[in-house]
Length: 140
Ligand code: FES
Image (cartoon, rainbow, N blue to C red; front, side, top):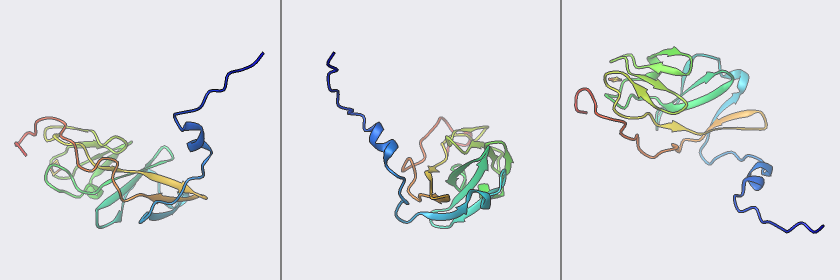
């Protein structure tokens, strides 16, 4: 029986086989063991980027609250969420979604790649601007 040839148009097979590359301008974090579990650490100043390792996965996000600019690296960690030290908005570091009285915008997140056992943060955000999520408590 002859099986018809079908071309993979998704590119998924190619992407899975291709080795990961270090993004241009990437921030080197070191090995996964160098990133402590459950602690927020600022790793880049311009743009301000912080990382949080949760459940073995490193998440990178903007270290500036989209409400009024407080440093999230000074916030409180609860699992995969960080609470802003100023007005207590809670941000999920994997999706950037927020909740709380001043939860009006999502937090920028950044891709994290591992190449040959070394973890890097790509300083180009997944979304170029923090998306509006709803109405802010103070109209910001
Ligand atoms: S500055 Fe973060 S919630 Fe207001």
